[in-house]
Length: 146
Ligand SMILES: [Zn+2]
Ligand SMILES: [Zn+2]
Ligand SMILES: [Zn+2]
Image (cartoon, rainbow, N blue to C red; front, top):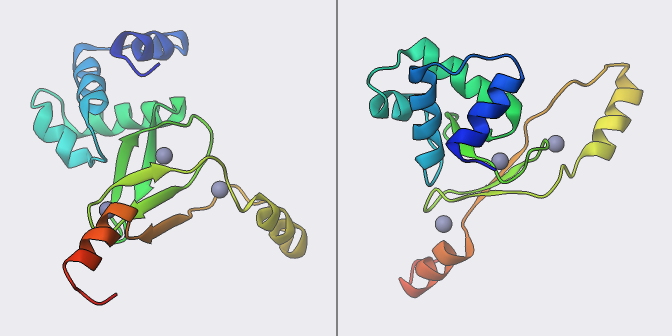
């Protein structure tokens, strides 16, 4: 579902114009194997300005084509998403690998918090950081204590 034509059609169906520079940004985003920053896309699409890259990435995020990943150094990256719904991530601090989790595990907590505080909760961030299985194996075989 994440190919360039399908994404362009979806954007147009929502009334967004897909200009050549937006197209270039979408193509560059879809080609990224891992997670990427706005600066990464700027480097790859020299014809597109920062505002165009930001705006296009926001549209892709709204479509669920791309999701936002908060890295453990506090920087915000994006990745081509395997989920269109709200979800969280497992982020490996060793190799930088990211996995989309199936579903939100804290929806009960959000409901309880809302009831207890009177807030209408509109969103939350929750990412999990650690070493993936492959990185853990490497650490063990290198003899580095855990
Ligand atoms: Zn890893
Ligand atoms: Zn994701
Ligand atoms: Zn959630």
